[in-house]
Length: 303
Image (cartoon, rainbow, N blue to C red; front, side, top):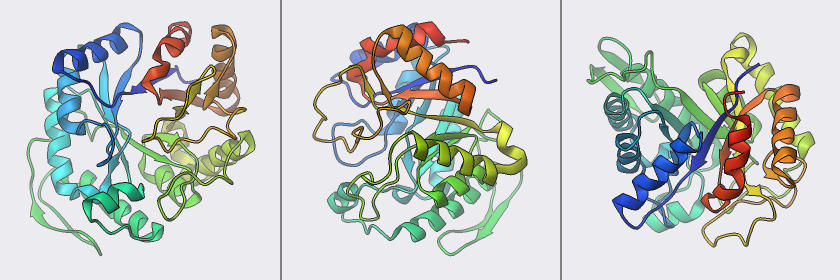
């Protein structure tokens, strides 16, 4: 049985002092990872510099992304940035990556939002390039979207063969890709093909359990090496959804994405999902829920 791990998504601060204070608070509260999103629109720092500042201000806290959008960067350049960050953080990087999906990001930047199958194929190629560039010796690759010719890139990541790769997803095709390529999987609701938000028809505990079953079946022999988790989207009564947020918890009350009741009740719910379904990595989605969620982390961290 896996030990619980906890992360929190942190998006923005007014000053460096405020930002590193948030990182230190997470470390002092027993969180394992500070995660930064990767969206063009909305009140969010750029992930690479934000992660480096957080790592520099802490000693134990890991840093990661929830998640890099593959469409925004060539994987060779991302591999270089990630390897540099892994070295400078002394091996504390967790690299979350997905296709990119939010229509507002693409519209605002004048980018084309391709249909989901094309984005998924591009992500599959991007993962092959990332892992190849992080390997030993010259690397070449000929794909539909990326071509690399005899590239020998330095530095290599400190974590070998590479930093843990986190893939978030809720659709069958993304889950099958995650089963083959990810070290960590963050289960989400499916997103609509047009990038407008989560699919309102996808929700509830039965859907979550089906996704876990699909993931395990697709992973086969490597299943036990995958850490499975999800994002905690609401703690307690929660508050009004921020204008930038695409989160939808209306059908998620019986899943680990929504926690209510006492600290003991919330902790018991996460224990059940770990003991019965193997989910052990829970990420706080809204920083405004930190005060309510921190006692749950204190109750479960290390167990």
